Image 1 (cartoon, helix red, strand yellow):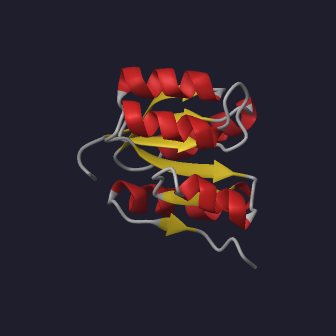
Image 2 (tube, rainbow, N blue to C red):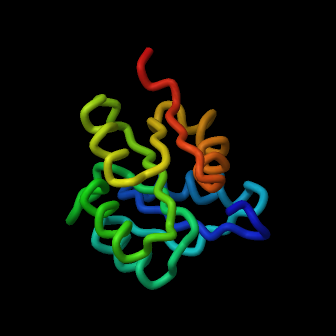
Image 3 (cartoon, rainbow, N blue to C red):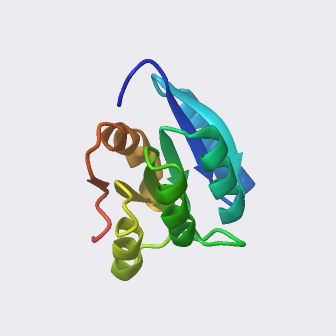
Length: 134
């Protein structure tokens, strides 16, 4: 799915971290951030309306957590790939997130190193997990 420009929706409740993700991805080749959401309900609405190629989703979102939002996004925008970026590093949470059909999971502590490679892998249809278990 790596083509001319891949359209990205970011769902993250921290405005500062959302801006960081957006600027990092906007500088990536072939990526364009088309929407930003600060809660799970808004993420679902924007995914349904915008049909992004990729949704970068936090687990700990208000109103509806990222895992529940991912389940609905998979139904309403089935072609959108999902990459979780979260501070949560529990194996159970990561497994639950991946069980939604997401293609990747990056912990926030590793986002500087792993975000761009993760996005590339997920857009190619590959699974990406960073070195979470250290």
